[in-house]
Image (cartoon, rainbow, N blue to C red; front, top):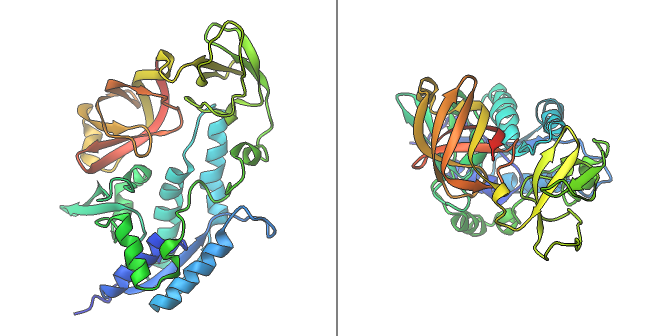
Length: 363
């Protein structure tokens, strides 16, 4: 017997959401698509692919035989994602807008809008899995280790995963493309999107310069020796090698230079040589804005688990301890280039327990 529950799938115009919609349609759900516009790009720009993506989404929905709805969430994106994105740079940090977008748009604004259209369930093309224990959603890694996107879902509240489907959770990316090609979906060989739509193919520094004024300051080495001038600390992140624009320095060898730290008080960019420079490593970080998807952990002040400080990093053993309103995360092995503003995400096996924002590190 067919399942006629109404599902609205977030259609991005890519192969993942295309196959997610197809799978649910074949499973008997009453499927509709919803294309989100999150950025009001200029009509003459070539940077954002929203128009092309919408065209592809329409093509796929026509092929599958489902209705495509559209919605403009650009005001909400600006207020709840982009302004926080900019404010983090003012604090000298490196934000992750994809994580903010999942929390504020895809699993809040999008979800609410889909429900207003009569959706009983919502679905996306994320490579992740959900299970329910005693009615409480549990977020699990996607089967494809190279595509698992649970890292980007760490800030979504547990309740927001209720009545959510991830049809691709048990599939490999190669299988998804095969399904798309076999069913003659236009997106079967479409390149995966990278980066943020509103930046597109532009240099990040050029884009950010439209919203933030340059604030030149000194580039110094670990001993305070001035080596050059930067145009703004916002253009750099811890561990960065490219874009420092420091050539041969007297009394220094030819080893490449890396960003070691940013001093907001003096507006100095501190750099050092060597990929394994000790000042790039730390075992201890402090995290705030913790979201526990596994809500039982809210009442536990100290425990051991695994964590990762960047997407696709292998899980790292750590001990977490709550101290006042933040958490100390002590790693068993020193971690390289921990960047404040990025996310630390916690795991127990395949379960994503939750995550938080890296506030600072102990060096």
